[in-house]
Amino acid sequence: MNYYSLNKQSPVVNFKDATINGQAPDKGLYFPEQIPQVKKDLVGNIEKFSNEEIAFSVISPYVGNAIPEKDLQRIVAETVNFEIPLVPVAENIYSLELFHGPTLAFKDIGARFMSRCLGYFVKGNNKKVTVLVATSGDTGGAVANGFYDVEGVDVVILYPSGKVSSVQEKQLTTLGKNIRAVEVHGTFDDCQQMVKQAFIDTTINSKLFLTSANSINVARWLPQQFYYFFAWKQWGDKKIHQLFRYPAAILGISVPVYWRIYPAYR
Image (cartoon, rainbow, N blue to C red; front, side):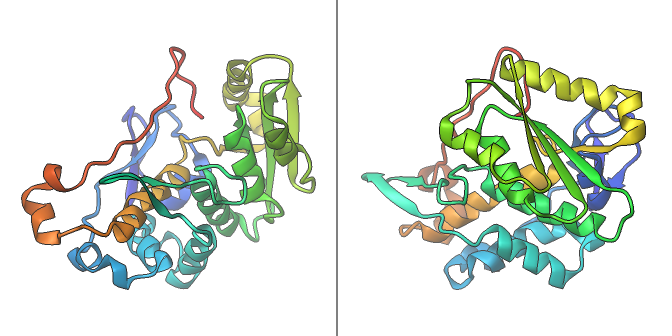
C-alpha cells in the first residue's frame, strides 16, 4: 500500500515512510492510494474471529510488506488487549465504550498501534526519533503511555498549564524515561502553534528527527476503524443478507465530532 499527500506536491511513500514522516514534505496529510475491500467472510462470520484476528485482517492491507506478518500480529495483539464492550443504552441503541484502555481515552488504540509500529521501524537505527505532540489532555496521556520505554523514540508533549485534569497531568508527567512533558503558560492552540513552528524550523530539524503523534499520522488514525468492526461483532440483531440490501434500515453509527473554529489537530 502506498500513500500520497492530499496536497499532491510530494512523492508517494509506503506505510513505513508515512508513519515516520508524520506529514508529507508539502505539509499535506498522507492518505492511502486505495481503500482495501474487507473480506466478506470476516463481515459475515465476524463472531468467529477474535479481536486480534479482526484487527490484523483489517489493518494488514494498509501496512503491506512494511512490517512482517509475525511482527504485525504482535503489534495488533498489544494494541487491542483490553475490553471494548458494546453496551445497551435504550431499545435498539447501543454505545461502544472506548474508555477501558490504560489511559481511559478512546485514543489508546491509535497511540498504542502507532508507538509499536514506529518502535519497530526505528529499531537498530543510530539516530533517535523525537515525537513532538501538543495535547489538551487525552492525546498526551495516550501517547505517553503508548510510547513509554520504546527503544529509539523520545517523546516531548506540550500541554497548557491549568487546562488539563489532574489525572491527565499525572499521566503526562510521572512516567519519566523517554517521556518528557512541558507545561506551557497558554492555551492548547499556543502549544499546537509551537509544535507547528518546530516542524518548519530548519535549525531544530537539522538536530532532531521529528515526527508527530497527533491525529495527522496514518498509523494513529487508521487503526481507529477497528471500533466499527468490534461493534459489529457484538451487535446481536444483525442479518448479513439484509445489511447489503437495506443498510440504512439495519445499522446506523453516530460518531461525536469535536472541531474548533481554529482547526487544530488533536
